[in-house]
Each structure stands twice: as C-alpha cells, then as structure tokens.
Amino acid sequence: MTLDQLRHVSNRAIAPFVAIAVRLGLSANAISIIAFGLAAIAGVALYVAGGDPQWYVVGGLLVLLNGFLDVLDGAVARETGEASDAGDFLDHVLDRYADVLILGGLALGVAQYVLGLLAVTGVLLTAYLGTQAQAVGAGRIYGGLLGRADILVLVGVVSLTAPWVSLQAYGLDSVGWLLVFFAIVSHITALQRVVWTWQKIT
Image 1 (spheres, rainbow, N blue to C red):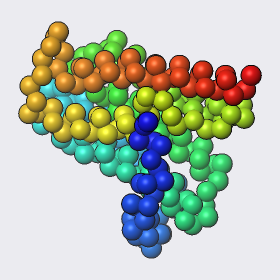
Image 2: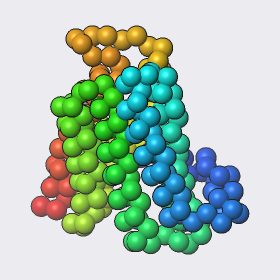
Image 3: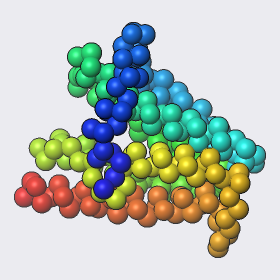
C-alpha cells in the first residue's frame, strides 16, 4: 500500500489548514502554483547540496512542504466547490514538473546521471499510467509499490538526514541508494499499473 491510498486520512487531518486557506482566499490553483514554486526551489537546493550537504535540510523541508500542499490544494478545491477538470489537469502538470525538478536536482547534485534518468522516467511513467487508466475507463490508479506521496516522504526524510548519515556502499551514499530504489521500484510500480489496467479493460 502506498501513502497515496491514505488520502482520506490526510484530508481529515488537514481540515484546519483547509479552513485557514479558505479564510485567506487562497484558491486550489494558487496553492498548486505555490507548491510548484517550492518544488523548483527544492530542486535547486538539492543540486547545491551535492557540494554543501547542509542544503539537504532546506531541500528536504521544501519537498515535504510541497507534498503537504499537494494534499491541501485538492482538499480546498472540494471544500470550495472549485474542483474541476481544468484544476485537476493543472495540478497534474505541475506535479510532474515538480517531480522532474526534485529528482533531477537530487541526481545532478551527486552526479548520478543514469540513476537520475531511470528514477525520473520510472516516476513519470507511474504517474502517467495512473491517469491513463482513468482515461480508458479503468478508474484512476494510486496503488502499487510506490506512489508520489511515498516518493516525497522518502526524499524529505533522506535529505533531512543526509548531512549526518554517513552511508557509503559500492560508491554510493544515502542519496545515491535512494535513487537506486526509485529507479527500480518506480518501474515495477509502472508495470503493476499496466497489468491492473489491462486486466480491467480486457
């Protein structure tokens, strides 16, 4: 089970923040844009952290905040009656660019270009197949070994601990091994979603 499948729990937990956002007049789209901006800054921080590990703390915090806002925007849309296809489309477009910036920054910072490419393509394919299933009438899929919430939490936790965790094995540190994990598990998740969708539509 991925954390994305626990959205109903997180939606209840963030109810006070939804109320605050509504009182401030923040629209769901505005929150999505702010979340993307934070992801872009996080990507830069994670890249810089390759030379100065203390920046991992900044990047990790921003990644976790991006994840929080990713839950908040949908909850605000439902609360205010703003939920729409246009808002959903914007949210998914910005999320995909955010994923590229975050994982790209992480990979470039430690000069792991092949692992970065594999991780990014796996994550993008997983997200694409989740929504493509909906497009062909099988319903949106959030399941599988690795969802976006899992990715953001793992990046956040590993980044926050990276300055103090000295893990070196086979030439990779904790960030490098995180990329290995994403490179493998994201593609397995994508294949899971292919199988599930195919079973539903045939």
